[in-house]
Length: 403
Image 1 (cartoon, rainbow, N blue to C red):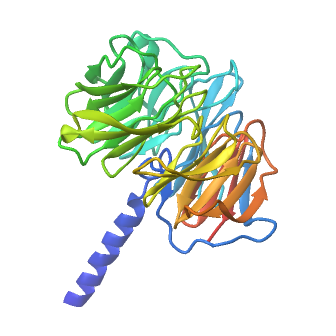
Image 2 (tube, rainbow, N blue to C red):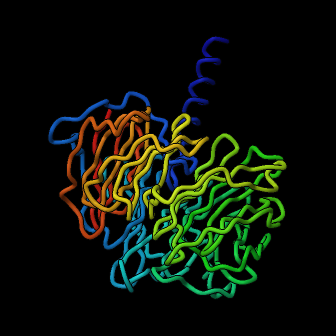
């Protein structure tokens, strides 16, 4: 009897653990690294098997989010944002209009859905921030971050995925007073407001750093990198980071007490080291070559991997020293980079998916194939979940078996 109870308890804990995995912007922890076992080390010449696809998402560049074994993704139809809900077999379960969406240039949905404790959070390209009940999709609360926090939209429409830390939901209105704010995730009421440096928002989804004496939110605004005390909203530090168009769309990457912030449009990458328990920073190294505009960087071991934008190469840099380990010519002007099991999954803006070994010796390509479905730009970041690679290209979502 005792043995049976133990087995049942372990089964319950295993089920809870399986249900607990939630995929948000760039994975579970915003690193772009997916913790997946038993993935294929190479693909056939035609690429991995496509299990299913869906055409008709509308215009958009947002990525897949996954919670409780359901897939969430957004798209633009006319001038409205639509949330789509699928099961893992690609069956459309539901859809819901959530507000106005960006239809001025490079049309479509932008920020990826954030799922948390039975709620879904979305920021549209026009600044509508909504909280929906995950089961019913009913509206729980709604704000417009520009109207409610005295700011204004940016050139290509705000692109942010809300960051949730315990009861706090962090977003970046970019106002002179309410630059970065924390809201109560249940009610939408203001918990704290940080004036930052008064910059506009910069298309960046923030990162949470928890292992410092002062846990903090790190993000990029139009002209600065910011560190903010997550408990109080106090600005801890700032560091100037400018480029031609005030676009800093890559979430910072953190590891070994260091933060890598990468921007396109003539800037490149800056590595900062946290000091004084996270209350200050110092510059460690910088380079103008690693200038990813919005494709993300991944840290694997002691190396950073990603692509340039104006500098049309794949790059590998020593994380600690800034030494360039290699650069290899790109088949386009930029690429999204994610990783799993020491392999790089690179999605170029020419529509090619490349599988390469994460090694500092060279850009070691193993397999590649082309995305043939969908519309417009190849900008959405792919997602890996339970052996499936999810690729969004405009109005199409594709699921490939990679295990």
